[in-house]
Image (cartoon, rainbow, N blue to C red):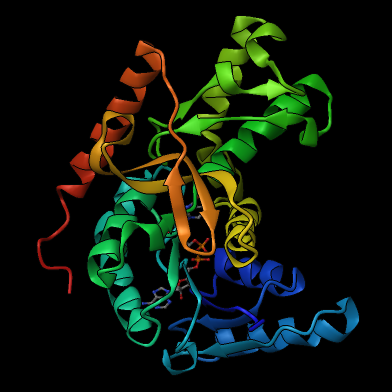
Length: 312
Ligand code: TXD
């Protein structure tokens, strides 16, 4: 079977860390693209020189143009500005929309069958830019945020209960922003909902810390935003797609009526396999949960409305 070819656009913190995980996880050959001259080439050489030591044989190539990306199976889009302290994700929209339109437009020319995994913020709105510019069906444009948000929630619960992170499962729906919707009712330790295990005020505190999880790291780092856990989220999506694992993972998806929402990007559980986003995993929400999800979706839709009609 042919080895997967994965283009990672943006060789900054998230992009380079993603390339590292993908190559060392033996998921495919990696082409790392950035506008900064020499930087993706240097990082790729450095990554590839670890191959003989850590035992992988994936090629890692760096470039400033898109020629070497042709025929990619997966395009991971991480290029763009990251938040600085005091900024919201939406503050990045205008400038990042231009970067996403340019990069996705160029990358898609030689890779018409690729699946795009979006990372650039504001995530859900940038997914719409990629969908419009690429013309790809929703199955092949998917946003990475839910794995990060649920990863944060799982980590906070593991810290609180002093149990292995592996025993904790969490569910977060909604846009990747302040109005995201962590669902404690479906968040469990070894199958038992945390609402049965922790007092309400602790659950509320974990929900609030999850929603502000990105901002907490921005504040600590001062010069940029999180990248190790985001890169892990991309790794899990690529792994599910290239190995056709049919994993149910929370991702940003262009909804077509699911959960009562239409023509908007929000995080929902979906099935990932060779064809990309192979189906939304829909289930019944309480009235309160539904209201929160619809509020989050309305926020995303409001931001989508600010995109220019012509993105080229
Ligand atoms: O959950 C999520 N989706 C996210 C999203 C989690 C973490 C970070 N998230 C967002 O990813 C973040 O808000 C940013 O919008 C992106 C990238 O974050 P990163 O931390 O990697 O930013 P860096 O380190 O500044 O890297 C960005 C790189 C940098 O090397 C630039 O030179 C490059 O993007 N860049 C470009 N490359 C190619 N082409 C163009 N036009 C371009 N413009 C900038």
